[in-house]
Image (cartoon, rainbow, N blue to C red):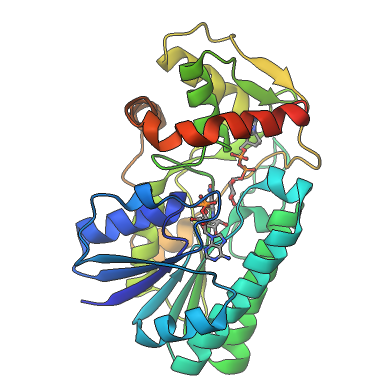
Length: 332
Ligand code: NAD
Ligand code: TDX
């Protein structure tokens, strides 16, 4: 039985991880989360106070971070500014949280000798051509496109340097696009599901030919626990579930699953610098650590996610109008 410090545990993937840990281990969890617009206490509702405690605070504040890292057996670091579109509008919080926040946590892990797992993204590798037979591997050179992905790349490099220079006991994972419950309505899949629920037509950036490699958030969680238990210090592991789909195909599937004509969507202004395709080769994680994803059927996982948004309107309703008003200012 360990005590895990989970940063960003009130966000989308962090809260899915906390639920996963409570269900599948005896560990206790301390969540450190600033509760920005993206964090939501309600994502941790129903979890026993004996197993999960929420500390509201900033990962860039050493006075908050230090005692929590000192008391933890391991840090699992999810907290980040995570939305590409926001990073194009106002990059500064991305530097503060993703770079300075990660630095602050690494310094504490160094001071107290605490095991550290850093959560990152496949976006650090840039993008692929649609017909490229190669996928991203642990050896792909870094080539980030957006303020978001460049700060995530910077944070990964800090972790590598703190391992090599200071002997911090860290691992890194770079995962593909996640879907599932508790994802903020600014993101692609929940935006379109909640649009349909509200009678708004889904919005596809540009032609919709961009490809994302989808994985259920619960499979991301099981992969992170596997790396925490069996990963080799200093190593990077790519996490993916062979879920490549064009954005257009995803919108059409959402519309079909929700009983709408599959062409009932609008093409809107494209994202500046929009990455064309992400695709993960997760052979290392599967062969060296024996991980396999559980949600192999994207359509079934998406249908369950649609049900979750239908049944949990109270969780997302307060954010919806503000998000749509912001996109409207961008022609999106
Ligand atoms: P999210 O935006 O839903 O959640 C981020 C959480 O971090 C929120 O709860 C927020 O309140 C908290 N936070 C932000 N700044 C903070 C600060 N300074 N101090 C403390 N807490 C702070 O993000 P997400 O989609 O759950 O992503 C979580 C992590 O996973 C990120 O590191 C992201 O880069 C990575 N990731 C995401 C995806 C994806 O598809 N969403 C894919 C790969 C990797
Ligand atoms: O309304 C939309 N219409 C649309 O076509 C939105 C919000 C997005 N898109 C497109 C842009 C992308 O090609 O859908 C795709 C997915 O968009 P996002 O949900 O914004 O995700 P993405 O930019 O791919 O980044 C996500 O995956 C990697 C997460 O937000 C990151 O945190 C993670 O690192």
